Image (cartoon, rainbow, N blue to C red):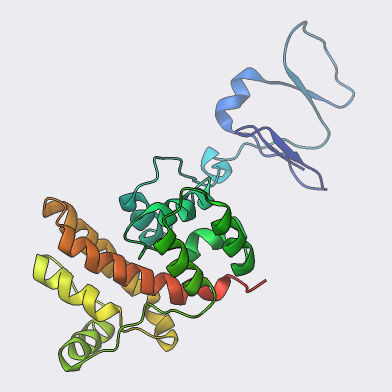
Length: 238
């Protein structure tokens, strides 16, 4: 049996009770058959042996609640950060004039199918009509964010694909890498973690560039293509 004093959950089973050592000062233990009552004292009746465990193993899963902005939509996807209300991120994408943003990551977190997401999208009264249309096409597989690689972008893609130590420190590097990433395919899945790292570095360059809108556009397109491949496959049709 496990008692998580951090969130108040108690799970049954023939196992030990795990207690944060910091909580021991507030709890009095009595062994079966050795009861000595003290009025008002919080008490646990123990059968067997009690042992302390570090508080770290009882840490809850991290979730995020914040204002939903383009920056937050991108950052939480790129960092794969769980969020408390994933559908609010999907909704915000439909309200943006520039609708090229990750959506499948948030639908996956929400447990929604593509059919359910399309119905949810229709219910958003303040969604931009053009955004609603284009997102619906993406959900229905009638639109893709893939951009065919030419010789220059193809060479860049091959370089970053084969170099796990790729670094991005300048505006031009971030722009070139993100432009190349829009040409990725499903077969590139073994490199998705690497691509997330490249997008993290690109986002850092963008932050240092006084929020350059042109570079942000490149990051949005690359992140959306990665989202389409990585999490689009995890969102069922129905």
